[in-house]
Amino acid sequence: MDSLSCAHEPTFVSRFQNEGSVRCSAVSTEHFGEPESTSSDAEVAGELDPKQVPVGNRMTSFKDAFWRFLRPHTIRGTVIGTSALVARALLENTQSINWILLPKALRGLLALLCGNGSIVGINQIYDVGIDKVNKPFLPVAAGDLSVSAAWALVIGLAALGVGIVATNFGLLITSLYSFGLFLGTIYSVPPLRLKRFAVPAFLIIATVRGFLLNFGVYYATRAALGLSYQWSSSIVFITCFVTVFATVIAITKDLPDIEGDKKYNISTFATRFGVRNISFLGSGLLLMNYIGAVGAGIFMPQAFNRNVMVAAHTALGVALLYQTWLLDSAKYSKEAIAGFYRFIWNLFYTQYVLLPFI
Image (tube, rainbow, N blue to C red; front, side, top):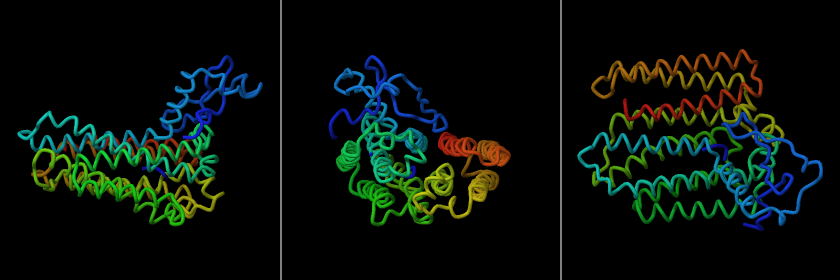
């Protein structure tokens, strides 16, 4: 998860272009490929009356705001991770595959996406002031989505997710799912608002992205196949690996946000120890991860595909060192920091892509 958003319909749109076409809010291209905004004559002439804008354009604007509200890079992480875990469980039990279960698997994925959206959404509601400095492209901060609309989406997503899990996956998975929502809530919501404190913040992210996702999805998949739970070497590896990885994401996610965090007295590792030190710490932890993966491939050939483990993780480790060098050479400019953080997420996606083959 990231640092963790219906009233009247016109609140979904902040500005409009000439002749009734909708203008999206300003979105920086350094944030995961989202489109950059352009200026328009409407900004000079003033806003149009929202009632004059065609319903189709208002719906298009809302869909754009809703997509940004869901934080697409976290959705990609959830989809790729879930797909890889299910694939791993199926490859280990090919004799138990039953394609009739596919709709149930898709419902499970939808529930995870609902939980993800609820958590990142509630963060946007309580971080609106900070986001206006750090992430002005987010829809609540940009004024493209009202706070009341954001609350409706957060509550609706959470309720839908819990409902899907409770009616499809049993008490244990429902409890784990609800616990994940609880952690995501206390991360952002006062009076606890644990994102203010570096250690609790990274522990929450590591728990949700590390243990809860990997154990929960793998357990649910085996249960759907009619199998009792059993740890496999691959799942132990990915759970440990991603827990460390989620810790790195938790401490590096604040690198691009240091300006707003300082302004609002949010204590993060980046504000306390500096961008350079935290980027080196994150790279060092990931490098240890990759060295451990190479070692597991060499010394545990009975458990892992040695060639994939050694070659892939060596290549990823070298790429990490190169990106860290590029960041240092760029003197930790805002653009370089954003690029480095994107690269960290790309490494995260890649690790799950490798899972079925290790």
